[in-house]
Amino acid sequence: MQHRLLFVILILLLSCGTYNPVQRNYTFEDKQVFDLIERLKKDPADKEAATQLPVAYKQAADKRKSVTESKYYNLSGGDRYIELSKEFTVMQQMYEAIVSTPAAYKAVPQPWNPSNAIQNAKEKAAAEYYSMGMKYLDYNTRPYAQKAYDYFAKADEAYPGYKDVNELMNEARNLAILKVVVTPVNYYRNNFSYWGFQNDWLQDQLVRDLNQRSFRDVKFYTDWQANSQKIQPDKIVDVNFTNIYISQLFSNTYTINRSKQIQTGSTKSNPPQPIYTTVTATVYVTRRYLQSNTNLQCRIYDVQSNGNMFFDNFPNNYNWQEETARYRGDSRALTPQDWAMINNSNINPPGRSMIADRLLRNAYNMLINRINDKVRF
Image (cartoon, rainbow, N blue to C red; front, top):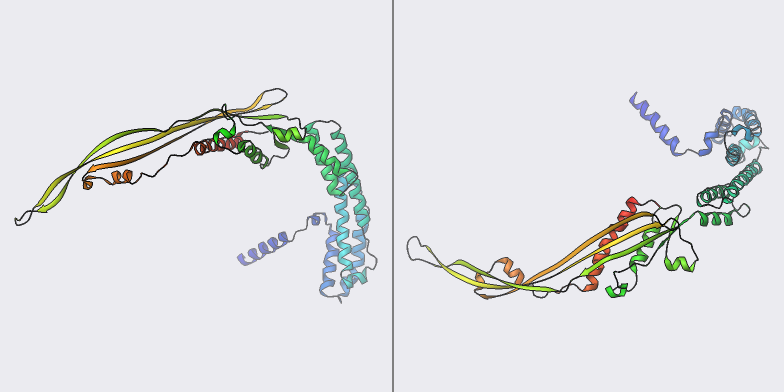
């Protein structure tokens, strides 16, 4: 029983792997025809199959030729004709199977080629979709423009290049797109070059990152792109650093007194006892440090209502410090930490542009993650 069950499962999996979507339209008569053709492929001398094929084929063809759009009365006009084309596609597959099998072609020398019927059904479907697309496009609003685009796309899929459908798809697409402009970033009372940047990378990066998301009907522009293309925005993204603070380099010094007992010899007694000597050193530590912080503020609002759809702040801090040292006295009194500071004498503090870049990128990453998680344009 287990072996039989495994065999049945294997057959089902193999049949799923070769499934043709048109097969869902197969009737009992269709399956008989395809089975008989398959028999003649394997054995052209199969007289029983050659005798039964014309009768089975006539029944299948007559049934298909009688099919009209009324069979799919519950579907819209375009969808009805698409289903009709699928019905005729079954006969197209049957036609191709017959003419490619000599024994079947001999038994049915004049099979029906439904290519004209398929083309006619698809053209009628395209006409229906086109008409619905024009209806929605005439409303001249973004939500209806998206519906218009969908119908024009279905028309183009049914009958590629139908009338001026490609131009209308572009028109509907442009009308359906929600246009969002990202304004230049305000770098806290200074321009971007003051902080060491070659350009306003944050504005460009924000536009690129948002356009790479899977928004179906939203496109983001810089202000320059919008102006050059004469685009009227629907939403505005304002990015503003309300604070960028980078302190000067501060330093202070302090001393650490070290002392340690080390063995310097042994007594002559039996057993010998260790002799310890106290060694001392003074460590002079110089601590250099600076502090920096910023706050990135983002507002996304509707142009017509001026109402916010998003508003938040993204603060970030970065503090730097290093300690160097020198000493006087006996080096044997020093700890590993002392030596680390003594050998740390060539460390230079980061420059202003490096600190600003780190602050801004950290704040930006928080912003883009929040937009990805929370904002629905």
